[in-house]
Length: 410
Ligand SMILES: *Cc1c(COP(=O)(O)O)cnc(C)c1O
Image 1 (cartoon, rainbow, N blue to C red):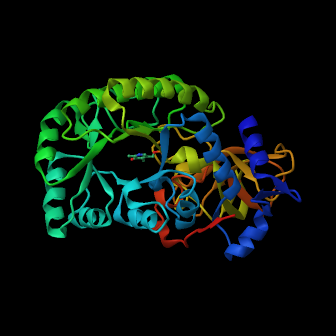
Image 2: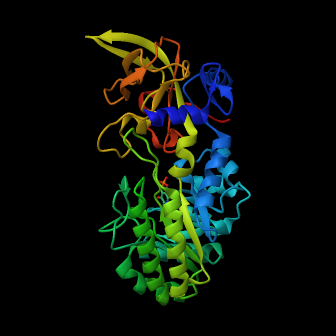
């Protein structure tokens, strides 16, 4: 519960209601023309990046992974606060290119980049993080049509995974990256091709709350890159070690100790520089950690019914906007995201317990089970926290053809 109380405090209570950026959510709903809506708190976003940068070593750059929340206003806001952007599609790339961030500070990762996407990235001067040998060859072929030398980095699939990642994206067989043991064969091919090699990228996993596991992964990542760098066709300038910093979604979760991660990273980076990566820019790449906690999903109670002794609150939103809160975006066990009555955020949440269900005709559309609430009624607003990352764009918005949710930065 303390997790929820901290979240309410971080957003603030205005006249008894939850606030975002100092404005009551009921006013935000009017501003949006209705509910449901996602509201992102601008000053919390700025503060989170500040705290993160304070924890990370001074000589490590911060990249924002746009797929966590690609809303253009968010990406624009982050542009002066972070050093770089990582994108995973041409559409995300265009959002990043519209900001003041320079193209050579944008990297494009992800399997299955089409020739059109490669062409757009090469024309724009964005770094392509190569996911396979075939992708290297396609990028070089496309680049010769464009008449621009492609800037490339090699994404490595390491021999190790990372303990405690909510989503594992490295180690063993993977669609991501080039197996570490194959990288020494590919580097000379890049050297001979008409391509500018900048360095390496290794992203091992997502949503990790265990500082020791991240510290170990970062150390291993930098060691592996230093070793592979010996076969590089040009001095390595770019070392993107990924991220994976998690946020405490659930009651039992403890927040990640980013200061511990940052302190250990300073040591690992120093070792990496001594091992031949002296001139490189080190980069940590984060999405969810930056934006997840600054967003809230607000939805209105449409119906309140009791079925065989259980109270159900049916809301106008649901899994079509916030799939993760329904437990279907990568979770093994469904657990409640932190939820409060936005209308009565200032009151004790101990008057009733209810199931909060979305408006889609499937039992999967369960946003909260046995949620403790103050006395609530039809028309009240409910807020689901941790909606800043992998919310609207990670949800099946076409499902049941319900209306879209508004998004706003406040
Ligand atoms: C998804 C992804 C990220 C962001 O992961 P978070 O858990 O949101 O920090 C970073 N880098 C790459 C390559 C990704 O695919």
